Length: 468
Ligand code: NAD
Image: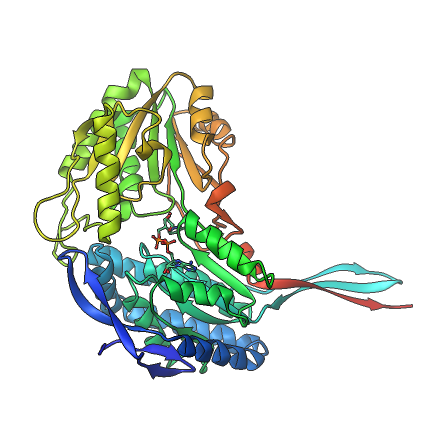
C-alpha cells in the first residue's frame, strides 16, 4: 500500500499495484507509489474530457482557481519541499524554492490575458483572431524538477481552458501525487488528474485517443518516441528535451570574476538541469586560471544528504544516471583528460559523486559531445572565436548557451551567433515565467513560458464576420 494516492475525477485513488520510490541519498526504497492500470488511465482521460466542457467556459473561475493553487504552493512550500528532497535528492532549501517557483508560475498565468486580436475592421468585414483551448492535455515530466516542470505545463494549460492528465517520472512521483491531492481542494473534479506508473504509462498516454495535446519534458530519445506516437492522430506536441549548453569565455573575461556564476550555472541541482552549462570553451591564455578557479569551487562544494543543514549539493537522482556520469568521467580520463577536481563516486550508500572539473578533455570525448546531466564539467581550449562558435554549434542540441566577457557588446554579438533557444551574456540559467524557453534542433519543438507558452496550449481560430 502507499500513503500517496492518485487524483482521478477529483478523488483519491489507489492502484492495484505499487512501485518503490528510492531515496537517492540512501539508495533504499523510501516510499511506495501507485502503479496505475490501463483502466485507471482511461478513467482519468474520461474525467478530464468530461470536465473540459465546463472548465473552458468561465475565464474568471480559472484565474481564481490558479491563484488559489499558487497560494497553496506558497503556504505548503516546506512540506512539499521535504517530499522533493526525499525523492529527488536536492537540498531542502532548493526543494522549498522549487515549490515557491511552482507558485510563481501558477500566479503568473493566473494574471495573463488570453488575447483577442482584431486584424480587420472595415466596410467589408470584422475579423478577429482568437485562441481556443484544445481539450485534454497529457503532461509528462522528468525527475530533475518534478514539481516546477509540472506547473510549467499545468498553469498555462489550465489557464487556456484545457484539462490535464499529469504523469510524473517514476523516479519522482510523490511530489506530483501530493500536488494532485492539494489541488483537489481548489480545482473542480477532472480538471487536473495525476496518475503514476512506469514508462509504459507514458507510452499509453501518448497513444491514447482522448488527449489533443502532449506536453513532454524529458530526454531526446524519449521525445522522438513521443513525437512518433502522437503522429497517427495528429496530436499537437510540445517537446522540451535535452541540452548540451556551451559557455564561451572571451579573451577579456576575468576568470576570478566569472568563476562563481559559471560554477553555479554548471552545478545547480548537481548539474541535473536541461539548460545547465555542460561544456566550457576557454581561450588558451586564460585556460589554466579558469580550470584552477572552477576546481577550487568544486573542492569547496558541500555534498551530502539534502535533508541536512548546510548541504549545497545532494546525490545524483538515480542509479542509471549515477552510473552514466561515472562512465563518462572515467572514459574521458582514460582518453587523456585530467581531473582537476573530483573524478569519482563518493564511498558509502546513496548516489553521491564528487563535483568534478575535467581539464585537457579530448573534443570527441562523450562528456563533451553528449549530455552528461550530472556534477562533472569538461573545460575545453579553443583557438579563436570562430573555432569556439563552430564547436559550440556543432551538435544536434540547441537548448541554450552563453558568452562571457568584459565587453558586453562584443559578447552579445558572439552570443547572437549561437544556434540555440536562449543565448545569455555574462549569465546562464536566468529563466523567468515571462521569458519563453525552448530548444533548436533536437532540443525541442515549441516553447514553454510567457504568452508563447500559453499559445502552445491553444488552437488559433479566425472569427470572420462579413459586413456586406
Ligand atoms: P526521460 O525521457 O527518460 O523520461 C521523461 C518522462 O517520459 C518520464 O516521465 C518517463 O516515464 C516518460 N517516458 C519514458 N518513456 C516514455 C514513452 N515511450 N512515452 C511517453 N513517455 C515516456 O527523461 P528523464 O531522464 O526523466 O529526464 C532527463 C532529461 O530531461 C534530460 O535529457 C534533460 O535535459 C531533459 N530535460 C529537459 C528540460 C527542458 O525544458 N528542455 C527540462 C528538464 C529536463
